[in-house]
Image (cartoon, rainbow, N blue to C red; front, top):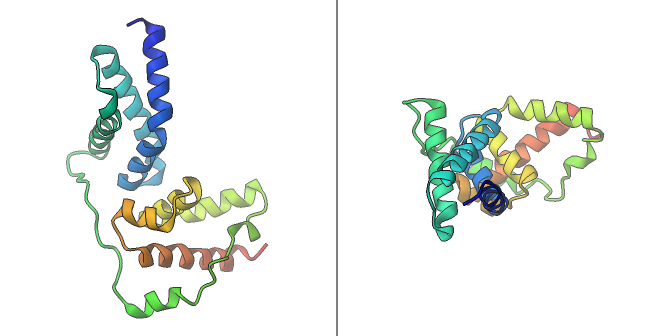
Amino acid sequence: MTIEESQKKFENIYKNTYQDILKYIVCHSNNIEDVNDILQETYLEFYRILERKTINEEKMKAFLIGVAKNKIKKYYGLFYKIKTYSLFSKNEQEIEWIETIKDDFDTLDFVINKEESKKVWEYIKKKKPIVTKIFFLYYGLELTIKEISKELNINESNVKNILYRTLKELKETFGKE
């Protein structure tokens, strides 16, 4: 295979798998700040492997997820284990509280310009990793609450609770504008 053919094949695979691999890395990383580094390392390693051996096209996504999993483990060291922790209480009062929040709340009501959006993002990044992941998946990748629930292995009411509670904090902190 020539270099041009190899690059074209890689670009096609990258285009077809990027969204899924990004989602996987976001869901399994400890910090949202690490996602770009891990993503870059994953595709770099994949390109190196692609130059040496042929990979079945049908199993490409699964293969890339395996590479990403290894890169995440390596990135966080020997003690890192990919598993989901229950970070939420099962307090029924909190779950009922979520029903009182309007579903039509829009962050665009108070995020007007780029500078303010940076402030909002910096605020979100200081929250627990699960909050940052949910916001990134919901607003960055435009996943539904149901999809986020499935990806992070937590129930939908917890995703809604975190999302809406943080939106309420943002509204109080940054104001409606």
